[in-house]
Length: 378
Image (cartoon, rainbow, N blue to C red; front, top):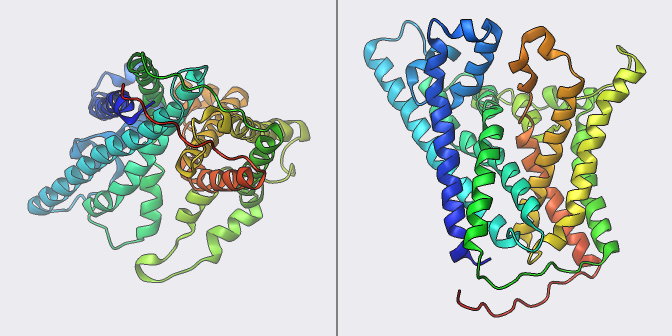
């Protein structure tokens, strides 16, 4: 699919996810109404507020819910903090639109919804949505931290907390966005030249998938082990604004957290480890199919595809955790989805490295792209 055809569905998807998350943030005010606890229990209302607050454009809702603004701030200071908060949200929504648009353009260009690629395109766009949301939150984090009036106090832990706050709402909004984007893309793809799927040597595809999965396993198996994670948390020290980087490092390096079955039964421990195995299986299978799905195995396409594959594996493992966990029975049904979408920063970090490693393995195994055919004006 040419960029001229891909830009329309990408624009539609970017606008839709921006509007959905803006609407979700605007809905945070409804949870402050007196009758909200009659619809949901108190714990569920608090959890929903935690989901929606990162996307709330109203500074009174966000600043009062997370306590970033001091109660004793004077009127002029409160106004300045509110202006900073609005600036942060403007940057957040513009960045969300830009990041999703850029990723969707590349995905639709290299994995067009034709020739049996439609399910892969849908899943890739869905996985890209929480990544775009995480990047948007990261870009706007400095302004949001400054709006709390404590921009010089423990900056790195505050930065980690802001980045980790995008919440499950981006996953749900991303699913709706991916569905509509694929529908529009199929309409705009009508009449385009057929793009048959490439024939990739099976041995090269399996080798690339194995190497890429091994890179992801470094985070999931090695770095996420309890003692290693504790070393990452405490061993790196700094001073001044760069003090206490442990939270930020764990956010971008750890896909999970696990230890030996010392405090639980072996069966229960193995059940939880099955979710980690599922993550690696999804990543391996996605990377195994990715070279054949791409119209060309370029470095940006392989990196973006590997990031989406890692996020899909992460979501699959979290869904399995939801099925075996009893959080809903204790804290309410909303808490079942609380962990959905966590770990996206680490998935982005190791997805990039996984894609580069898989591409290098493909090239070493002898897989080469054919020269691109001349583009026929559509």
